[in-house]
Length: 457
Ligand code: LLP
Image (cartoon, rainbow, N blue to C red; front, side, top):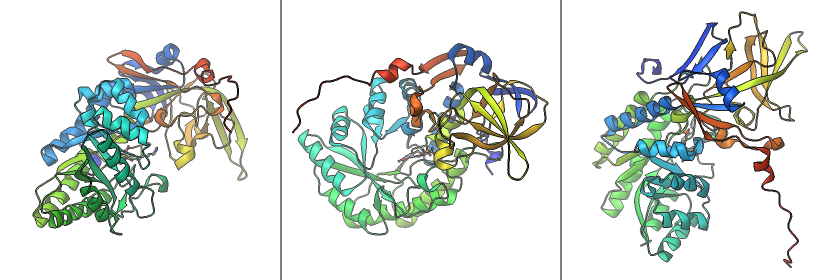
């Protein structure tokens, strides 16, 4: 279905070219910049964002939202990947921004991103985060718990402000994705359950707070979802809550946020769920349910992260070592070690996520053999790709490219083994520039301090 979309659904960024006689190897260029030259110039591993592709994807989602709902708001999910430059792009695109920590908020504010277009998420925002957000003039705080209703209300009161808020609801949907990124069934830490009555109780409590202006409800059913049914069912249950609200308070909540979670391709056998498939499907449910309940169509917002930034980025690695092992069944497995690993891409180790890779500096016609791409961390589970067929002549010094690594790669990166986090560069029209520099050893050492003990007891 999504292959008929006019929007890109493959795993490659739009301006990635790969010249070779087969699909497992070739000379890679992104926006006209050769992969090999990029690594020579900026080092490896390297996250390479195809900037024009980022704009294309962001605009696609925005456009489909407009055509499906006649407006609304797109809050880009900063957790998928954010830095000051990307926040500037989002500002230029006139999009909103979903942040979930003081750190993400600080990046947005450093980019002069308009606070009124920011929504603040999180199941356990600290008092200091709430205070900072309200003082900064954040547009919407998405309240996640009963404790937080009181907390946000008290802080807003103390600052003499009325804060616009949404309530995050769990519609009881079992989204078909990895357990750790499924968020809307009953047994999760997020939000107020609709089924248990907690949602209506939270609405009541919110309505009693003079410093809170409840304008809408929110749900996010999970991440990396390909089926539209979960989104549709969630939308239907949220509209039912809007109707109950209207019946009780004789006025309507004007806004409805249906979250993010739209799946992308990580291998060539997958294709992304495209905006023009999923958003109109959700729109038709919301419109029908609103008409049935005689509700005005609320202002709809969505929060895609992965679907915008994920496919824009390719990670380039240099191969350092290779070795072959004999398996119990008599077959061979070849290990290809690259100069990064689980510290800049934890997703395979954490979720069993599957990626694809290509030899990116030359064409090889060597036979394809069963290979495992691993990192340089001191851990057996430091596997980037567990099993992939790659040319048998891959050797130290070769360049390996892993596409679709823009989301939850750099943003979840760690310094495990005191390895510094890679640089992120953007390429466009044959030019490249660094937007997040590579960490160096001094960055890592900067946190070590030598202080005298302080009396505490
Ligand atoms: N809105 C809310 C409230 C969220 O919690 C998330 C993701 C999003 C939007 C964006 O979801 P997206 O469109 O990017 O799927 N680290 C995991 C994904 C965790 C997602 C957490 N929340 C992964 O690497 O797959």
